[in-house]
Structure formats: structure tokens, C-alpha cells
Amino acid sequence: MTIDYQQKIPNNVDLASDKTLQRALEHWQPEFLNWWSDMGPEGSHQYDCYLRTATSVDQAGWATFGYVKMPEYRWGIFLNPQVPDRKIAFGAHKGEPVWQEVPGEYRANLRRIIVTQGDTEPASVEQQRHLGLTAPSMYDLRNLFQVNVEEGRHLWAMVYLLHRYFGRDGREEAAALLERRSGDADNPRILGAFNERTPDWLSFFMFTFFTDRDGKFQLSALTESAFDPLARTTQFMLTEEGHHMFVGRNGIRRIVDRTCEVMQRERTDNPEKLRALGVIDLPTIQRYLNFHASVTADLFGADLSSNAATFYTTGLKGRYMESRLKDDHQLLEATYPVLNASSGQILSEQAPALNALNERLRDDFIKDSNSGVDAWNKNLEERGIDFRFGVPHKAFNRQIGSLAALKISPEGKVISAQTWNANVRDWLPTPEDCAFVQSLMGRVVEPGKFANWIAPPSSGINGQPVECEYVRFS
Ligand code: BYC
Image 1 (cartoon, rainbow, N blue to C red):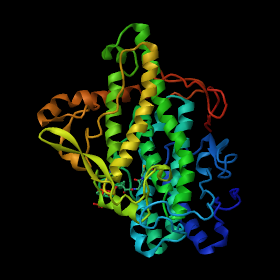
Image 2 (spheres, protein in one colour; image 1 turned 90 degrees about the vertical axis):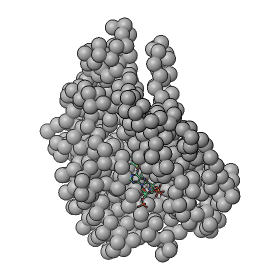
Image 3 (cartoon, rainbow, N blue to C red; image 1 turned 180 degrees about the vertical axis):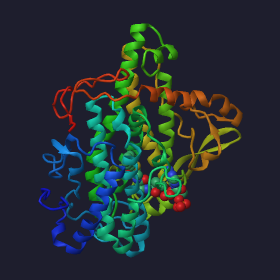
Image 4 (cartoon, protein in one colour; image 1 turned 60 degrees about the vertical axis):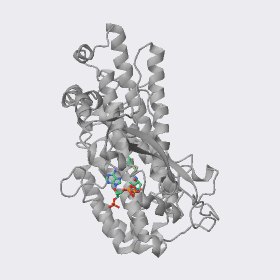
């Protein structure tokens, strides 16, 4: 279905036929725009940016490109088409028709999932709001803005569900989504990683590589939901998520490319020398990687979770690729390995699969992250550089779940607090690392120009040249 752009709120859900809902959302819209003006990308409000906007949810229309004045981006409500006769694929209701309305008994849990998902979207915009001031190129500035407007749209996706299906509490939750603030001491965002700072572009690329990948896996699990409107809206969100991870994967690759080029030209791998030459040494990149991988691993929740078991059994949230998995999709007898530390070692133990669903999704995420990191390593190998990046062990630096109580090395060895303290500067970014990376951040925005510490991309956006004027300042 084509999206109606004549409406105040573009949508493909026939909003005009439900005047009460339309009025409620039109009331929320100026609040959203106020939030965007206060917390959206700093200084961007007069810019014309080459952005993609969805004009329909099918292949032909979901990525239509053109110049848009930033605050006039048409945030809207887009659901994938309904699949006729879709049946619930898992849990106690397996085989029954999916729900078009929220069953009363599952209302609180569904609302909680939707609010948690919705909260991450504005949080990431808040985390990234200063980055435009230090963009390494106009191409990167445009990509940042694309990610930001789409996170804003993902907020709209969750707010639509709250307004349409959860009555007064839904409207209150939608208002609260614009009130919490990333990192705020009194009213923070819900999940840990979304209260961390994203102070520089290395952090931004790591965030889009790892944390947007959590988005991919959580959204995929929600596309399986028995609550059909949630499944349909998350399906469409996933199409947009791909670009966000591309920004991270390619951003890091370009940083590594530039560093390798200088390493080879100067015949050195000495971090001090490389820093003096204005590029980021590979061990520093690895420490940033360790930080973002571990903070994101926490986003999957505790390794054993009765919440996760309930979400699954009641049909609210499935597994990654649920319908392709070959088992009974109820998991009443099944087990799954989880980690437990005893006598100074991490041991794998079988636990009820239903309780281990967070761990399973985390494992799916780690597998996917590894394949991205392998691509950077292939580049190093091809260049003949003797360094390999690695995703740290999933127990490293955890704050959530049973392993949070222990100190664990990136290789997965249980260690004493003393050993941790003696080595942590090699494993996680130090204040000096952060200060150095920040010292490189300066705004480079002439078309086709790039900061010294990052290589240009191999191609531009949507077939445009790399030196295209992606952002027109006025
Ligand atoms: N930080 O039973 P557990 C994205 C809490 S990213 C702080 O394991 P559960 C995006 C938990 O709430 C995808 N607290 O929890 C990416 C619980 O609290 P209560 C976002 C945490 O419910 C980039 C307690 O600890 N979507 O889209 O099984 C840019 C016990 O935990 C954290 C979703 O996450 C944490 N990290 O699992 C923009 C999907 N983890 O009950 C966007 C929706 C846990 O004791 N959310 N806690 O008060 C969920 O499915 C689940 O809420 C979670 C947590 C998987 C997050």
C-alpha cells in the first residue's frame, strides 16, 4: 500500500478513518518535534540533506532518495502488509490465528516490551546529537542524519502501537518516551547501553556495528510476535536497520584501512608513532570494540530469565528465525547451554531452553558480530598485517546476568580483581585513549574531503559520487 503523504502524519494504516486516534497522534506530533528540536542532531535544523524516505513498504518504494530539510522529514507510520491467515508460530498458542488486538491478560507484558523497544530509539538520537559538529566528511554527516531520522521514525512505530492499542496508559507511556533522557541521573533511558555516551565517531561506528545489531536481533524476535501489528511494524523497521549496521561495518573498515595505509607507508605498528601521525592504532580500536561488544551483550538481559520464558510461552516474542527452526516451537522439554562459573572456571551447563532464550539470542548476535569482524580481519590478512580483531568472550565486562558478579578476561578466563585491575587498561579504552580519539575529531565537511584518520568509502550513496554535496548548509 502506498503511503499517504497528504496527511499530517504520513501513514499506510488508514489513520484518517479513526479520528480519535488521529487526533491523539496529532497531539503527540508537536511534542515529538519539540523533542527533535531540543535533542535531535545539533545545528542541523537548516540543512537540506540527501535522505531516503519510504514512499511505500514494498521493494520499489521503501528507499526513495531526495533532499529534505531536516526538521521537515516526514516521520510516519508504516506497517508491512497483513499476511492472510497468519498463525502463531510458537508457544502455548501455537497454531492459533495471530491477534489483531491485545489480549487483556498479556497487555502489561506487551506494553513493557513495546515501551522498552521504543525507549531505545530516541535514546540513540540523544546519544549522537553532538556528532554532526565533528563529522569526518559530508558523506558521514549524511549517514549520521539518515540513521537519526530513522531512529525517530522507529519511535513513531512504537508510539503508534501504544496509542492505537493501549488506551490511556499507552498515551502516557508515549509521552514518557519524550521525557526520559539518555544519561540523565533522575530520568534515564531504560536500558544500560542507551545511557552511555557516544562522544566520538569511533564510538558511533562501534555503536552502529554492535548496538544496532542488537536492534536487528530484538526486532527479528518481535517480527515473530503473535500480536500481528507488532510483527508487521518491526518487519518494516528491520529493512531500515540494515543501513545502520552498514554504517558501522564500513566506518570501522575505513578507519582500519587508513591506519593500515600509514602503518605500511611508515613501516611501523608503534601506537605512539601512529598517533603522532594522526591515525588510530589498531589496539585502541580493539579496546573500543571490547567496550561496545560487552555493553551490547548486556542488552540481551540475564542469561536465565523467567520474563523471557513468559514472553515466549505467551507468544509475545519469538526466537531469531523462529519459523525456520526445526523443533516443537514450545520448548517444554528442551535445554540450552548457559555459562556458570565454579572453581575458577567458566563451565557450560544445560538449562531449560525456555529460561535461556535471552542467552540464545545473545549467541545468535555474537555469531553475526563475528562474521562482521572477520571481514575486517580479511582486510588485514590481505594487506599482510599481523594483527587480528576479536569479539571478546561473552562473559567479559558484563553488568547484567549471573556472570556480572565475576571478573573475566576477554579470552573468557575467570580472574581476580587484582589481575583485572592490572590489565584493564589493555582491554577497555583508557581515559588517554578517549582523549586521543577525541583530539582527532574536527569537522570536515567540504564535499569529497575526508578527515585524515578515515579513508573515503569505495562508493557514494544511491549511486551518487563520493564527492556529492550530500548536505546543503544554508
Ligand atoms: N539495562 O529478566 P531479565 C534497538 C533488567 S536495540 C538495564 O533478563 P528480560 C536500537 C530487566 O528489565 C533493541 N536493565 O530481563 C539499537 C529486568 O528488570 P525487572 C531494543 C536491564 O526482560 C540502536 C531485570 O534487569 N529492544 O532497537 O528478560 C539504536 C532482569 O532482567 C538490562 C529490546 O530490547 C539492561 N541492559 O530482558 C536504536 C526488545 N537488561 O523486571 C535502537 C524489548 C535487563 O527486574 N526488550 N535489564 O525490573 C526485551 O525484550 C527485554 O526487556 C530485554 C531484557 C531483552 C531488554
